[in-house]
Length: 179
Image 1 (cartoon, helix red, strand yellow):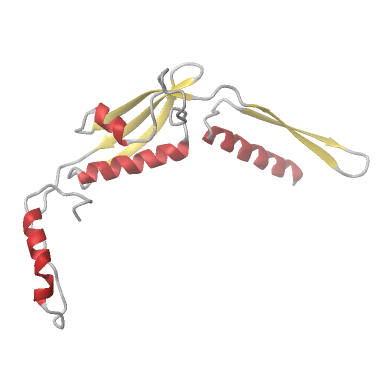
Image 2 (cartoon, rainbow, N blue to C red):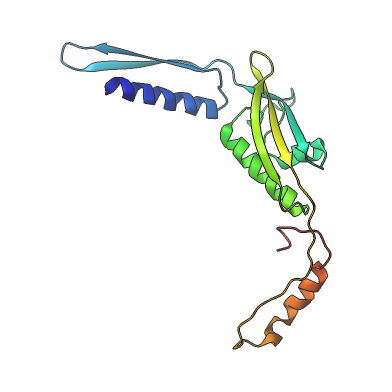
């Protein structure tokens, strides 16, 4: 039981270090039994260098330029002038956020069926990564007829303002923000 617990704790420590950008960290637990029926557990941790995102790539049927998409996401390429930002370090939670930001951006540009099909980090040398997003934007959608179904006991006069809004949206590209 104790060995499994130590192994699980080591994995948790490693995951915490990786979320902080230390992808090359090593955690080596040591256990020694004492005479009084107790144990000492020592975790030897070597963090190594932080994993820097050297390049961010967007592949697939993305329909929008890479430069624009890099401005949409939170992760950043590690450049020498980006001393203070932590966004240049690889972080799985940030990558999940980036995927959500990309989907919302594409949906606001009319690509209702957009999918970020995959995201992965690839080691470019011994300590840096390229971060890759595979995007399928799909077809652009436009608003057609937009109608309100209101109950009979409500006055349609109270909803006339929505008719004006819906008429302005007709023929415009689909957008989450517009909805």
